[in-house]
Image 1: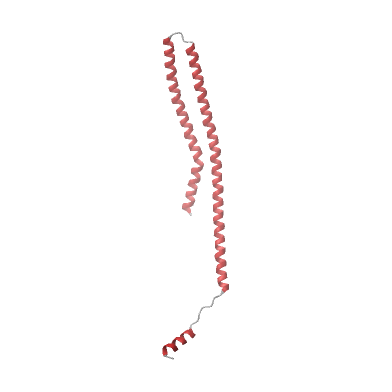
Image 2: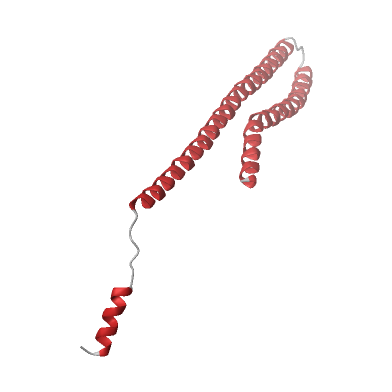
Length: 154
């Protein structure tokens, strides 16, 4: 044999290969699995908390929307009642008119009052609608702000 072959054989005999320790591998796999389970539990807890908070916000929003829609409905009914009463009063006045000039005067006065009443009712509806939007969106807005604060904190 040549020198190179002898030297290679000696080197191979002197090299030690690390032995595979199954107990260490098992411990590492167990630790990895336990960490994964713990992270899954934490993620589930966060998800559950988020779902519960969302449910509360939706319930609150629904209740608020129901209340607000009742307010808007009552305002609409009041406006319809006022309009109907004004129309019947005007009709009674027209029936009692004696001359054409009196009819024209009644009609002009009625139309002016109707325009004023329509403007007033529109302002009232705008006020009620604005309040309704604010009330309905308040729980959602606060929940969104809380979620964004939690995201920034994490």
